[in-house]
Structure formats: C-alpha cells, structure tokens
Amino acid sequence: MGRGAARSRGYIRFAAVVAVLFIGAVVSAAVYLLRDPAAPLGFSALPSITRPGAASEPSNVPSAKGADARKVDAILDSVDSLLRNNKTAEAEAVMKGAIAQYPSDQRLHIAFAELMLGKDDYAAAYDSYVRALASGDRDAKLEFQAGTVASMIGKNDRALEHYAAAQTADATNAEYPLYLGQVQLQLGKLDEARASLVRAGHLNPDDGRVWGSLAEIALRENKLDVAMQQIEKARALQPRITLWRFIEARIHSRAGRPEKAVELLIGLEPIERNLEPNARVLADALSALRRDGEAADVLAGASDSQPANANLAFDAAVRARKAANTAQFERLRDRAVKLGHAAASTLE
Image (tube, rainbow, N blue to C red; front, side, top):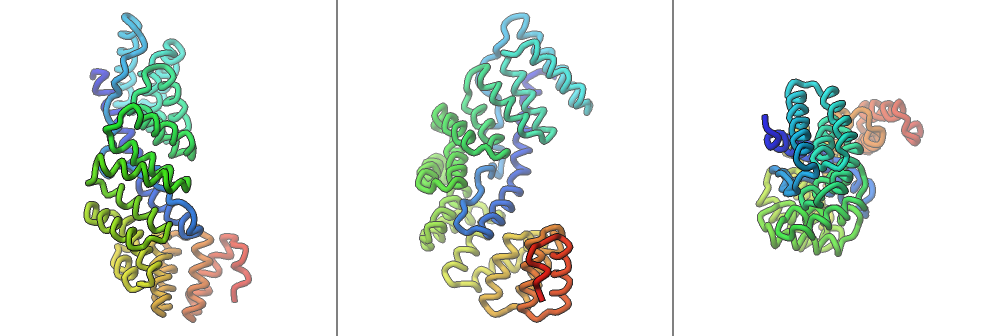
C-alpha cells in the first residue's frame, strides 16, 4: 500500500471525525443558546454535510530529502499496515520513534495528528498539526485542518488564526470563510461573521450552512424578516437538517407565531424531538398556546431520554406542576433532587 493511499485514508479519518462532530455541535450550541439567548451559536465546529474541502492531500513537498525521504516513505507504509491490522499501539510507537529521528519531516507530524484523531485525542492532534505547520509549507488545507481541530478543543482564537491563514492562502475555497465566519459568530463578532459568510456565499451560494448562519445572525439582531428569508434558503437547500428547522421555529416564536413553531417541531421523530433544545422550544410554544399538558409531556419525554440532566429534570418538573400533573411532577422532582439540583428540594 503506497503512502498516497495512506494519506488519503488519513484525510478520510479527519472527515469522519468532523462529520460526527456535526451532531454534537448542533445540540450543544442550541442548549447553550436556550440557557443564554444572547450567547453566540456554536457553529464553529459545524462541518460540511459532505466531505470537507480539506479532505485532500496538502500540496507541500516532503521535508526529508533523498535517502531520508525514502526511509520516511517506508515508515509511513509500515504504519499504514499496522493500522489496517488494528495495531494502533504499535503504530503509535513507530510514529513517535520516527518523529524523534526525523523531526523536520512534515508528513510524520500530519500522520501522527491523524492517528491522534482516530484515538479522539484532539489536543494531541492539534499539537501535531502545529508542528506540521512549523516544519513545512503552511498549506491552506493544513491550516484548515488545524483550525477545525483547534475549535474542537475550544481554542477559538487559534482557530480564527488558522482559518484566516487558510483563506489568505486560497481565496477560492468557500469552506475557509464559512468556517471563519462560524467561529466569529460563536465569539459574538457578528459584523465580522456576516462579512465572512457573505464571502462564502459568493463562492458557493448552494451551501445551506451559509444561509442558516446568516439567519442566526439576523435572529440575534432581531431582524426577523431577514432571518426568515435566510432560513428559508437554508431549508430549501438542506431540508433534512434539523438545525435549520429549529432556527425557523425560534424565529416564529420570537415573532409571536407559536403555532408555526409547534408545526415545525411536533412532527420530529422522538429521538430528535427529545433533544433538549428542540424540546424546550416546542414546550415553550405549546405553553404559549395554553397547551400546558402537552408542554409538560414534551419536557418529561426529553428528561426521560436524558436522565442525568439535572437542569432538564428540574424544568420538566416545573412544567408538570404548572400542568397539574401530580404524578409526573413528583417523579421529575425526585429525579432532579437525586441529581443534586440546588432548587429541586424547594418544589412543592
């Protein structure tokens, strides 16, 4: 197996990691928003629905020359063979030895970063990407990968630097201003985020993430008509993405149309409807329509699906009390008490 195939599989691993992160970014960002409506939406780690633009081999040339380069080739092939045989520990040991022997070879640092991604050790992966950037050409795709992993471990300031560098190195790739704009949005830099997202939209107007992100900015600024126009574009382009449905429901709720929010969320499959952000928006919309019993059932279902969430158990108990559902109230209150919610024991 040649090193080109090894590199290709390594970048596919990177794509797989950020694809999984998509769901986590949606859920955690939405929960954060609902607890603090003024907080920025956490789009920074929201990857492409398809394979990211970075998932291809960097254009940099190897650092090692001649015989050393051939030795590194052989090392990478051996590591690839070990990984194909599920010998991860052995592959890691070989990589560490190779890096000690050839510390200036960029390919080794990239390969080690990919190995750490496979172990979900994102901090170590980021450190390796930084070393890779320091030991060879600062390729746009490599900057993009470093930025994405930086955002995964909460280093948003560094993610901004990497995404900006990627954009400077390649002004034709829409992924770079898109991700830059998402991190800027997460940091509350709304004007800068809008400029980056508009630039991404010019490069790729068919990407629903651009319009969904712009809709979130407009919603933050209470420009509800603009927000609705943007989210309609996002939903038309990516109708199966629940996040866009969630944002549209929030727009309707803000505009005093709770019935529209209910229509958008009530028909979700239970696994999606029970996600905390969806459940909270749906329950609030049902309560606005004086359907308190249904609202209580929605939050109770969400709490049952996330039984370790103390805040959700407490709020579900409060909603059950409002609906005069005594059995439901006592069950959820007891859950909140057992989970250590500070105010749960005061509920009566």
